[in-house]
Image 1 (cartoon, rainbow, N blue to C red):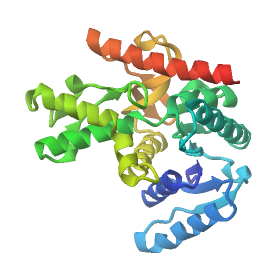
Image 2 (image 1 turned 45 degrees about the vertical axis):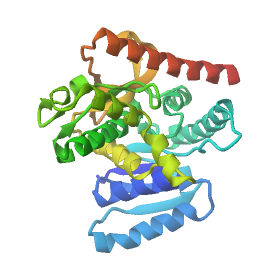
Image 3 (image 1 turned 135 degrees about the horizontal axis):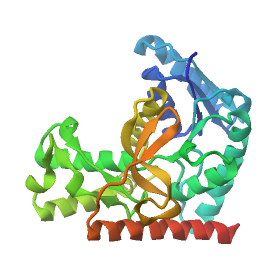
Image 4 (image 1 turned 180 degrees about the vertical axis):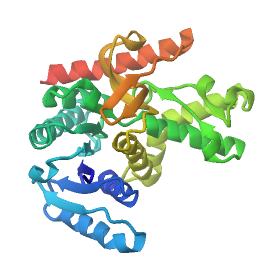
Length: 311
């Protein structure tokens, strides 16, 4: 039986994710959006590229018709609005929480056995909304953040050392944002710890650039945010699930005691397979690293508390 992935939101991240999934022939793709004609137009454009790119993935685009999500193995949610000038964090949180609830209610009816990959921001908080709304098992609600943040960290390491990005490996824990916790001690180039290759001062600069990675791109684009790398990160997670690869990736997962954190979504290394999060990997942290992770968790908890306050 052919695999099926539904992508909710046909903006830059959603459409590029659909492109990546289709061109890798991971699954047939359904693209859903509230905008009349847009998902159908983008799906048709992607389908017409298929003969050139030599893949046979079927791509369909619809407006607000979640019935086509039936039978999806994975549903990727990118829907939401970016923060606009004059908009408070509470406004953004409330608006995107409403969008997430609406989307997940539809998905939980149309594709009750699917795995949810959440990309919408503020990401860690939106995972809580998706879990509460869907009623899914916690292992089937996963946030995309660590793969993206780690890719940025790997990119900057490769730039610093003038080596292939394929040789760089890195881990980033914690929330998706300024409180994320890049771990130089667990990052290496072809197995060599970066702490032996890069000065402490330069490592700190790279860590800080990683934390600000999304903002740096927003500042350059002026009218948008990153989408190529987020789409690639989401696709890597989808591939690990669809192919049951048991791949260890940093993802936003629901913790219940791991790392001393209870009932909270936050970025940690997990094993991804056909059932979603098959294992949460607990690595040994120094006191300083653990304190940073706990601070990051506290920031996420603040967003979750705000969600409850705002109703």
